[in-house]
Image (cartoon, rainbow, N blue to C red):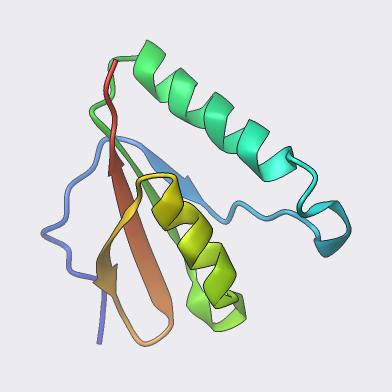
Length: 87
């Protein structure tokens, strides 16, 4: 299987990673808040995340879902999640 290429998005974050030693300390939240704010500053409508899901615990996917990201496409080992941005 491969990612559905019909999915369109104007901002993509790829390969964002927080080392295990720094998780649950607010670093990921700060990075995502800054990335989303920067995208809004440049009038982007949505932001997407793409990564290899083989190394991703379910709790990471759930964290993105709590932030408003929705699963849009999956392949054998890839995942794509998109969040609609508002001003």
